[in-house]
Image (cartoon, rainbow, N blue to C red):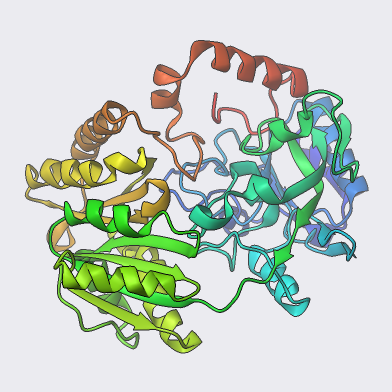
Length: 452
C-alpha cells in the first residue's frame, strides 16, 4: 500500500517536490516544541492549488493522515506529526499574487513568510503590524491558523483583524471561497472566520487576502526599570491607557542576563532594577508621564532612544530571549490573565519556583495584553526531569485557572495542551468544535489528535 501511495504522489508532484529521506523528513515533522514526532510517510511541496486539491483527495481515498506545514514556529505541538502523516509543506506556495491599491489588500499564498509581507508593505509606503520574534520564518497561513498576536497587539490587534478573505480546501476536499471582497455583507455568520485560529484541523488555506494599513509616524522607545513587581500597577495606570503606545513588553533581569550570555556583541542599557518594560510610542505626551514616574520614584530608571539602531538594540534584549535559552530545553508556558492580575501572576510564579531550588524562571511577555511567557530551566546546566515537569505544570495551570486566565494566549492548544483544555473547556463549545471537525473532516485524516 505504501508503495502504491508513493506511486500516486509521483503522479501529482515532480520527484524533486517529494521528500522521503528520513533525515530530511525529520526537519518538517515537528514544530519548536519538545514533543517527539513520528516519522512522516513523506513530505510534499505543492506549487499550485491543483496539486493541493489532488493530494487531499488522495489522502481521503487512501485513508492517509496528513498535516499542513508552515514555518512550524509554534510551541504546542500543533504542527508535529503523531500519526505518520503525510506532511504538506507550503514553503513553495509563497507568492504575493495580487496587490489592490483601492483597498490596500494583497492576495497571497499561505507559505508567504511574515517578514516578506512586512517588507512588501514597507516598499509600498504601508504597514503590516503583526510582529513577533519568529517573523523571519513563520508563514502567513500558520499565523492565520493560530490567530497570531505578538508585540503590537495592544495597538493593532491580532492577525484576524487583517484577514479580509480566505479560500480553503477542507479535510475531505471541499473547495470553499470566503473572499467576496465586500466591505459590508450582512448575509449571516461568516463561516470563513471558523478557520482563523482553528489550528489547521478543519482545512488547508489555499489563498488569503491580507489588509495593509497606513504607515505609522516614527516611534520612540523607552526602557523602564523597577525593583518591585507591585510598581507595575502604577506604571500601567499612568501609561497604558494612551493611544500613542505601539507596544509594551515585560522582561526580567534574568532574561537580560541570558541574552547577554548568549549574544555578547549586543549592547544593553546600563540601568538598575529587577523588572523591565520596553515601551514603544509615538508623539511627545508619553514623555511627560515618564517624567512623573521618575519624580514620584515609582521606577528606578528610564532610558529613551529614537534612532533605529538604538531601538533595534533595545528590542534584541526582548526578542532574543527564547533563542538564548533554547539549549536549556526550557519547560514553556504561554498564558494570559486579565490585565489587573498580571503582577499577581508574576508573583505567584516566582513564589512557586522558589520551592524548587533546581529551577530558574525566565519570565517575559506582552504586558499590555496580559500575556506572559513562562520558561523554566534547570540551574547549573541540569535538565528538569519529567516528574518535576509534571508537578510544575499542574501547579502553574492551577495558578492560571485560579486567576481566570487562559492556558494558551498565542500558540494554540495543539497536542501538548489538549488534556488540560478538554478538562476545562466549555462543554457546549467543545461539542460545536467536534461537530465542525466531523463536518469538514469526517474521516479525521487532517492533523488528527490536535486541539480536540
